[in-house]
Every structure is written in C-alpha cells, then in structure tokens.
Amino acid sequence: MLTNIHSMLLPEISRRQIQQRCFSQILSGLIPEIVPTANIRDVLEPVCGPGAWVIEAARAYPQWQVTGLDADPDMLRVAAENSYGFGLDNLLFQRCDIRKTALPYASESFDFLQMQNVNAYIRAGAWPRVMRELLRVLRPGGWLHLVDMELGPVSSPALTRLAVLAAQVVAKMNHENKVRRTFSSALQYHRWLVEAGCQDVKQKVYPIKLGGFEDGDGIALILARLAEDSKAVALLRSMNLIDGCELDILLKDVRHEIQEIDFCGSLMLISITATRPRLLQVSR
Amino acid sequence: MSQDPESDPEKQEVLYQTQIQKAETQMNGLLHQIFLQAQGGQMYPAKIPVNRMQRVIDLGCGDGEWVLELSRRFPQVQIFGVDYDDDALYRANVRRNAGNFRMAGFRKLDLSEELQVLDGYLDFVHLRRCGRFMLPERLPAFLQECVRILRPGGWLVTSEVEICEVSSPAFTRIYAALLKARVALKMSLDQSGVTVGIAAQLYPLLIQAHLENVTYELHTIDLGYMWGNYAQSFLLEIISLAALLKPLLVELGLFDAEGFDELHSQAEKEVQADDRCGWGLVVTAYGQKGGK
Image (cartoon, rainbow over all chains, first blue to last red; front, side, top):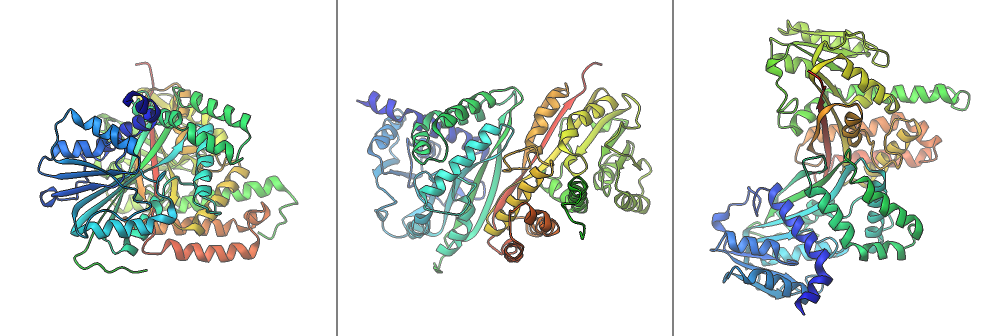
C-alpha cells in the first residue's frame, strides 16, 4: 500500500526533499537568522508536503511543539512514515486544506509559521485571505516566514522558453490576462503582508547556481522538476500554448542543454520574514 | 532624431546602439555601487591574489571607479583603466589627480580593435559590463584578445548584471520592450527577449575561450525597498533610457506614442512606491590562462 503511494508521489516527494536540502543549505538553518529562537514554542507549517521541514525542525528543537498540515491524506501518510524512525513526540500531523477552510486553531496559537514553495497550491487570488488567516493564528510578536523559488537567467535557450511557457500556464491558472514572467507570487508578498497588518517585512534573495562542474544539486533540482511535471506537461499540452511535437522537442532540448558542460544558470530563492504586531490593524 | 529612420536603417541602428551605450556609461557610477553592495564590498572573486600581482587592467573602465578603488586597496600594484569614452576618461583622470593614486592610470583605447598591449603583459584583466561597449557578436574575438594580453596563469574576470523581476507592472512592460529592442539592435544574447542574456553567456564564453579553472559566482541585487535609493535610481535610469528610445519602440510596433507616455509616467510612479519589490543578479565568470 505504502509502496504504491510512494511510487505515485515519488517525483513530488523527491522534489520537495531536494528543495528542503537546498533551502536549509542556503538559508544556513531551518529558520532565518533574524528570528530569535528563544521565544518560540509553537510552530506550524500549513502546507507541509512529505514533512521534510517539520521533521527537521522537531528534531533540531525538542522544546518546540511542531505541527504540519496538508490537504492530501496520502502526503500526510508519507510524512508520518518519514518521521516514525525518529520517535518524535513533539511533532503532529493534521489534515487541513488552507485554501478552503479556516485553520483549526484558536487565534494567537503559534509563534512561528513556515510556508515554503506553495504556489502550485495556493493561487494568487487566494493569497490575501490566506495571509489574514495565517496572521490570525500567529501570536503578537510572532514570525511568519515565506520561501519561494524563481528561475533566474540561464544560458539554455530551451530552458528559457520552457520557463516562459510555464509562467503562462501559471497565469492562465490564476485567470490573469497580463504578461507574467514568474511562477510564484513572491513579488506580491510584501504588499499582501503589509495589507494583512504585518510589520518588519524583510526580503532576502539568495542565488543558487545551476551548472558549473562543482555543483550537481542545482541540476538535480531541475531534472526532478521536469520529471515530476508529467502533470505540468499535460497541462501545457491541454492549454494549446505550444504544439505537441514542438513541446516534445523543447523538453528534449532542455534535458540536453542543461547537461552541457558549459551550462550556466541560476535559481533565485526568495525568503521573506514578517512579524505580527501587538495590535493588529488590517487595512483593506 | 529628426532623421527619417527609413532613409538609412543601418545608420539609424548604429545611432540607437550608441544611445544605449552612452546611457549605460552614465549608469556606471551607480552600478559600481550596486555591484559592490551585491558582492558585500568585494571587488573580485576571493581566490584571485591581487596582492601578489604587478599589473592589472580594467577594460571599459568608465569613470574609473573600480580602478581607483582597487588602487586605494593595493597602492603598490600598477592598475590601468581603458575606455573609448572621452567624457568618462576625463572624469576618471580628474578623480585620479584629486587623490593619491600614483600607480593608477587611464588611457583611451578602441576596444573594438586589436588592443595595443603586449602579449602576456598582465596578471589580471577585469571586464565589467562588456555589453556596454561591445556588440555581443564581437565578444568571442574580444575575449581572445583579453586572453592574449594575459600572462600564463593570469586571471580574466568578467561580470554582468541582469534584471530579473520587478513588481511594477508598468516597468515590467517597458523593460520587456527594451529587451525586444535590444534583440532588434543585435545587442542581446537571448533571442527570446526574456533577458539581455550576456550575464548567463559569460561562463560558456570563457570556456570557449579555452581558459582553465573556469567558474562563476552569483550575487543578488535587491531591486525592492531593501536597498533604498540605489535600486530606485537604477530603475528610473532604465525608464529614461526607454524614453530616449521611444521612436524605436514605436517603430518596432511595441507601443503607440501616447500609450508609451502614459506607461512611462505610470512606471516612474510605481518604481518609487514604498512597497516596490524586485531582484536582479550579478554573474561573475572567471578563469585562468593556461600554460606556465
């Protein structure tokens, strides 16, 4: 049974795990340096996927009470299975779809909220509501951390083209008609956070190397993303943004070009922190 | 600008190219600060031993910011700055003479021709934003020239900036048009017009120039509110460059004249907003000449 779920979710799981490795390497820790860990007791990741981050957090900080939520029961089962071996009594998983329902917690229940790479999941239009909900369950003085990735400049023309197509898919899914270059909503976070009543909104962008002899991780990440995205590729096909044969050639070119020895590229990791003020004033 | 573009398209193309290059030369000082901030005050990759070097050259030195800053840090090293822009060289010389920079000097050289420098004369060739003074199609030959004047074991360091994302929709539209114009003017290495493309091509170009130990570093630029005025001034400069090129943008069918004016003032407003967000990237690719 579990094997079956694993094989279905495998690309997604490996993608999230590689991401997690990248994130903690680059952010040099589980939470941003700016966040004072001493005051943290209750921690929530509202979209935890296979649990990579919550498991690491619960292991590194036994004094924290860590909760991971996800809408997908299969994903939660994988997360629970991943955590079994560590005997963690400060980690809890619960099913919740933050897109559809309120969080099942009283106001001011958490000190730290982590949201990473959830843009495939939360559409642009839903974000302002989600942010207000996140802020509701955050204690005054508590911290919110949003992490996302965008593709930066790359030397492969095929990958550049594929990224443009992918951004068009995202735009269509969000029912946007304007030109869009990004996958995530990271460019809007600052505005939404401020509108939801946050303070001390700070953004840091970290570059990740793709390509170059010394770095295998970046390539692994792209390949994982490509492999995972049979769904995304199907979506791309169904949207008629590109002819089917042309798409096959494009994907082949991408795989070829990113494995050339002179491939140069970059991913941008965007990390945004904000705090909830003592008095929450929501502007609309 | 009164000249009819139809009359001599080639001449007109060169005119536009020169306009862009001139505007980018004027952004040099600002970009020097942005480069330094992005690299945490570092002027070149950490593993390059400038303290043990004798001669360093900065090709396309502009106002001489990099040369003079390096000379301040390493007063014993001989540092040359060359450029083709007389105004920039004048400003560089004024600055040099105002400070105590005995070992720094500036010279006018046409970088599109064979460099009047001896083979193997230099320990370190520095090349920042070569897209400012060189059409991309000439880059491979130019890099060969750079390698020729390096001594065996000497370093070639190239860096370029690329704007990635800016939250202002009006700026994004204007910038997308500028990128398309660059493609039309053969000033881009990304035919899709998504990026200028030079930054991402430096690493492959250095490998093709047969350098050794070629690698690259990435540093981010905050184009949002975190870096305050630098980012804002930079974005405003880009918007004025677009205004300068308005006839071309209209001619290419990217805007109608009125639509552009409206978008232009909208973009100016948006990039000065408090909640502006965005980022760019500095790519520094470098390698060593083989043989010792």
